[in-house]
Each structure stands twice: as structure tokens, then as C-alpha cells.
Image: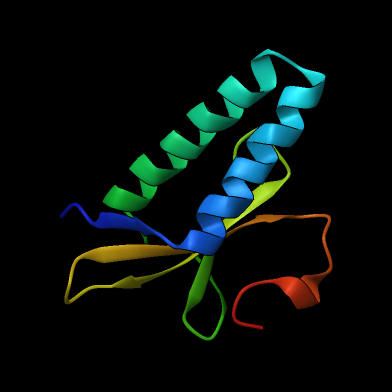
Amino acid sequence: MVYKIIVSPRAQKEIENAIDFYALYSVDAPVNFIASIKEAYELLAINPLLRVRYNNVRALKINRFPHSLYFTFNEDKNTVRVLSCFHNKRSPNKRPGV
């Protein structure tokens, strides 16, 4: 079963901010970050049953970058809702759903 990925405005803004930050220091880093995000979306579309972090919120570490996608999924509607692209060095109190 393939799940539809829905990106929240918060997650989209965090992704855009990360791309802008990486663009300040490298030409390749933003491209690699976008590719890693796409890979994560593809994985979530196929298998969103990853470890539950708290309540019903799950997380997926982004390859090669210090970010994690926090998300929920609805099996009845076949959707995965990405809540946040959280930088792993930020305060844990700022994670989505805390």
C-alpha cells in the first residue's frame, strides 16, 4: 500500500529554512538535502510504521543530515502527515506534539 504524503506548513517552512542555511555554506549541500528529503518521503509512502516517539508521533532520521521528520499516519485515509523537519540539536521541548 502506498500512503499519500501531506507536508504541514510548519514542516515546509523548516525544510525551506534548512535549504537556505545550507545554501550559505555549500553549493552541493542544499541539493543533497533535498534528495535526502525525497528519499525519506519515498520511504514513508511505502512504510510509515516506524518507531513511535511519543503519543502517535513517529520520527524518521534524514540520511547525512542532523534532521528528523516527525509525522503521523492515518491508515484509514492512507495518509502520512509530516509535522516537522526538526533539527536534532534543537531543544527537545520544541519538537512537535510535546
